[in-house]
Amino acid sequence: MRKFILLGSSVLLCLALFGCAGHTTPSTRCPSKKLIVLPDKYKGRGYEPYVINGVRYYPLPDSEGFVEYGNASWYGEDFHGRPTSSGEIYDMHSISAAHKILPLGTYVRATNLANGRAIVVRINDRGPFVKGRIIDFSYGAAKKIGLVGPGVARVKLVALGKEVGEIASADGKKPVVEVTDLSCGEYAIQVGAFKSRENALRLCRQLKTCYDNVDVESYNERYAGHLYRVRVSKSKTLTEAKRIEKELEEKGFNEAFIIGL
Image (cartoon, rainbow, N blue to C red; front, side, top):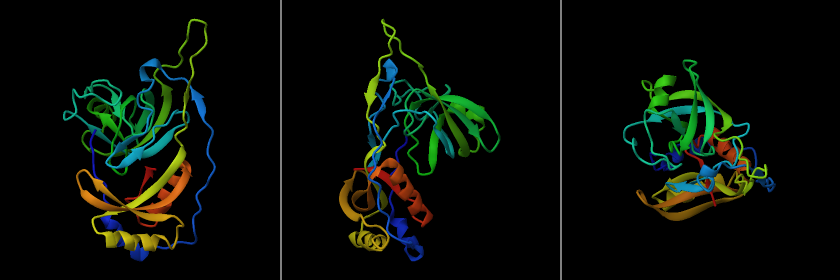
């Protein structure tokens, strides 16, 4: 899948508009673990956290009740014939899609909100790793939903369930695998990444007027070199981290995103 470096130097432009009503205290509640049935072909594949360009993604252990709105795109011949995250070989003419966190093998009904066309696709890859995009369709799927020409369109996604509904064993019992609930963990929100340490410290001081936990971390990015990234909050749940990410975006920090610690 496509890989992009997300740098936050432009966040300096919104410092003058930045304001807050009070401090945010992260929740410490942690959801319990859950038991789900995993199809044999997907056991141990695609459920582990993974890192792309310094961002850690946490695949969902279950797609039940999943609904999402956002921008969709498509990918084609540059990836045709290459392995997908599920291990399958990508066929650009097939009906499939890539999603960052839905379980591999999940069927999704996708509706193009610009023209009303809908299609059911199977998630067999990871991506798109572009801010503001939620799904990458295969070329074949993009043609059916009217996305090839525009390139990007707003869609609604509704998860329909797993590719394999149940697994039966010889004695009639379904094998159940315990999967760690990845919504429970430690997270932060990266607000910006700078080559200048002073710029990072400046943003850090500004954010500390509204948030209790703000720090600057020095690290080396493979393509961008040495950077200083500014992180907000240490949340104990993914839900809380998403809430703070949205709050920061509303304050003008559009490049803010969640990272796992």
